[in-house]
Amino acid sequence: MPREIIDDKEVTLPQVKKILKKREKEGELSFQQTITLEHATTYAKMTPSASKRLVKRLMKNYELKRFQAVQIVNIGPTTPEELKTLIDFRSANLTEEQLEEIAEIMESKVR
Image (cartoon, rainbow, N blue to C red; front, side, top):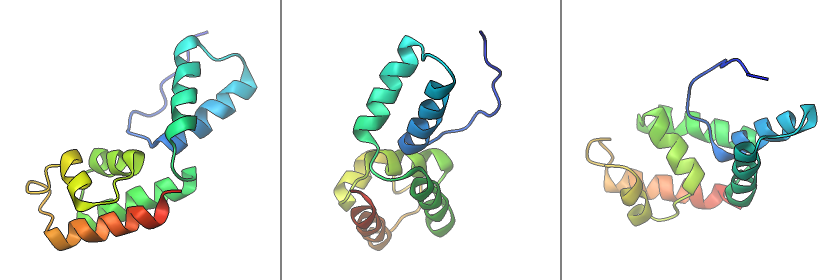
């Protein structure tokens, strides 16, 4: 049965996990959904609510675009060097100090 698209935005892996767990209770998941749930379960590094708050914090405090903040939360870089591989920090107007702050935030949040 086709599903209606309700929203079209980036979501974090913990949110994907939550959505698919809920969907799983409603009925059998498709092959793609099952694989996606396995991936999200393996790589989600925090709770869905914590990931949402962190995305908002990164967007507000560091003026990152949503897709950049979601990528950071999904991968969980804990060093400025790892962050630099994820985002073009120059176009994001991030200083070395800000990169260090984000890395420290991520280190404290990932489990």
